Structure formats: structure tokens, C-alpha cells
Length: 329
Ligand SMILES: [Zn+2]
Image 1 (cartoon, rainbow, N blue to C red):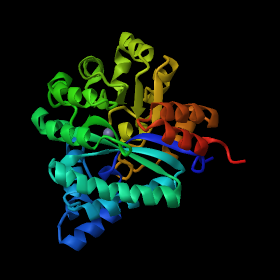
Image 2: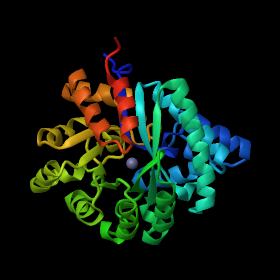
Image 3: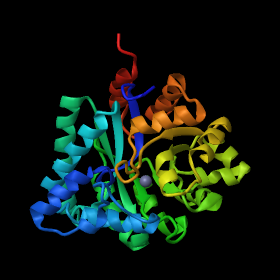
Image 4: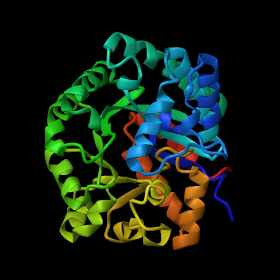
């Protein structure tokens, strides 16, 4: 059984992290950049562990040097994602990788991404929205320009602010300035936490950054009171099981806490994070959830409804996407 054709929503992807390896290789060849060391013999990305993954990720990003590169990237990513039935996707986009945090440069990169997203929506029936992210391991000060870029371009395409990168760099409260700035501008917020940092990192993220969604959040499972709090506050978890398995944040699919979290009343959603890095797709995620936990179309329907309700887009977009989730007549 495969779930390839059922309409899906994913909330947690990184735009550059969705880049097909062949696309990055092509760009590297065009620009004479030697990044052959980041690829495995089978042509995929190669890395040893999470820290090495971040290095390989950033090396791949060195090929993305202009708004035109990001226009092509966005189109390549949406073609691949739409082929797995995804009808709405949110992607983390980083001003750090788009002109080094400069607002004028960021606007140019963003315009190129929006261009491609509009074209893809028309051709492929997939809607993309962007969440500006600060890169945590670059430090709190480096996240401020990203937050300024977020606030200045908050609108129909940029719909939220968040933070990605190395979770163990500093504590959530160190990054409060950027999150406060975005919140005061009315932006919805999410933050990676509890992929590596355990319950305390999730608890501090909720307390100090006041987010409505958490990227991963699976570490919360170690603290039943925290799980209860997350359920009660209706904080939505952007769970990426395949990513967790490959990066060894969990010891295999059977031990992934997504079912326990869901059974405790937590709102869970399913995403791919950086699919080619983790040898996954949305189809593969659904297939593995079916094989491991017996999730079926009814379970996925709930997951997608939860994701749509938690999406950072405006209500007109939400209504338009809702129609794509309805079974074909
Ligand atoms: Zn992520």
C-alpha cells in the first residue's frame, strides 16, 4: 500500500534542505564550486551525525548565490514535493543564506522565491509559504537581522518567524529579543526544540519564546506534566519521524514517540524536514507510519486537518487549501 496520491500538508521543511542533490550538483558545476566531498557514492548527501549534517547543509548552500538560484531551487523543490501529493507546504527560509541578512538583498531573493511559488501554484496546485528563520548556532545577535527581515517582509508569503540550526547553542531565552520583535509585529512563531534538548529545552521554548508550534518537540515525552501542558495549550508539534530516525534522535521507527504524544492529546503533524538528506518523502513518511503503527487514511486525515488549522497562512489561503484536501468527486 502506498499513500502517494492522498493530499498532504507539511509544515516543517527547510527550503535549501529540500534541494535535490542533482540540482545542487548542477549548480556547483555551473559555478565551478568543488563540493564533491558532501556526496555519497550513490549520489545522495553524505554526513556522519547532526553536527556534520549542518556542515554538509551549509556547504550545499554555498552553491545558492543569487535570487535566480533561489527561483530555480524553489521550482525544483515544489515539483518534487507536489509529486508526493503535497498541496500546501511551509518552508523555513533564512536571510543568512540569501544575501547575508541584508534587508535589500533579502527582498530580491524573496521576490524570486515568490515568483516561483506563484508559478508552481498555478501549474502544480501546491501552495508554498515561507517562515523566516534565524540560525541558532550563529548566535543571538546574528538572529536579529533575520528577525528584522522577517518583520519587514511579513505578508501573504512570509507568514511566520522561527529558529533552526544547532539546538544546543545557548538557551531559548537568549533568543527572546528576535522572537519578541516578530511577535510584536503580529507574526506567528515556531522554534526547533526537543529534537536533542529534552523536556527542559521544550519547556523553556514555550515559556521564553511563546511559540504556538514547536519543530520536533519529541523530547517532551520525557516529562508527562510537560506533555499535558502542550496538549492543554494546544501547541502543535511539527514531527519529522524519518529525520529523527536517520539523525538518531530516536532509536528506530518503532520507538518514535509520535503515537504516545498523540494518545496524550498532543496535536501532532507530519513533515519531512530535509527530505533528500534523510532519504525520505512525504509518501515514505506515511508508508512508514502505516507499517510501524498501523496509521491509515483516517489517521492521516486528522493529521492534515491539524496541520491546516495550524498553518501560518491567511484564512483565504486556508480555505483554498481545504478544498484540495476534500476527496475527489
Ligand atoms: Zn528542521
